Image 1 (cartoon, rainbow, N blue to C red):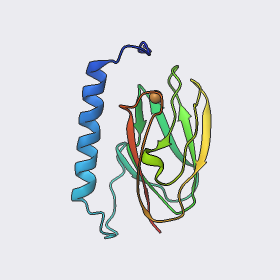
Image 2 (cartoon, protein in one colour):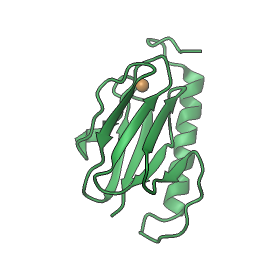
Image 3 (cartoon, protein in one colour):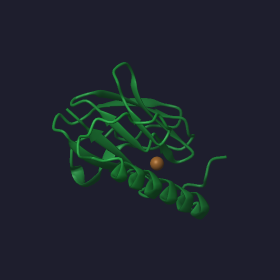
Image 4 (cartoon, rainbow, N blue to C red):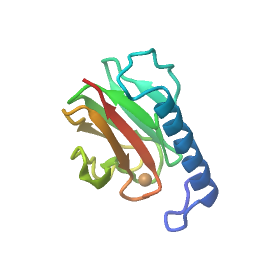
Length: 136
Ligand SMILES: [Cu+2]
């Protein structure tokens, strides 16, 4: 059920924000300090280990919300909604931007080469947020 674009789906926003807050908290507590503990594979937080690296957008949510990749990794974004979305670096940090991805379409972008934490958002629905972590 696609949401009308002009009206923000308040319930969905609230749950998306909650989901994001939860995953960010989980991320912080599991340590950004480079400790290479095994990361549990959950839809909210995944570490790419080669092969196809993918962010899926469904129901106005990035899955996984937090993705860890190698420097310069190629990332495919799969928009499974009927609405258009983008993956756009917040504040331009990291310099990546898929531009508008039409509903049902895919796009690719290249992760920054400098290790760090790169939040991103959807340029069309600014409440949509995710995070890319680059780990060398
Ligand atoms: Cu969007």
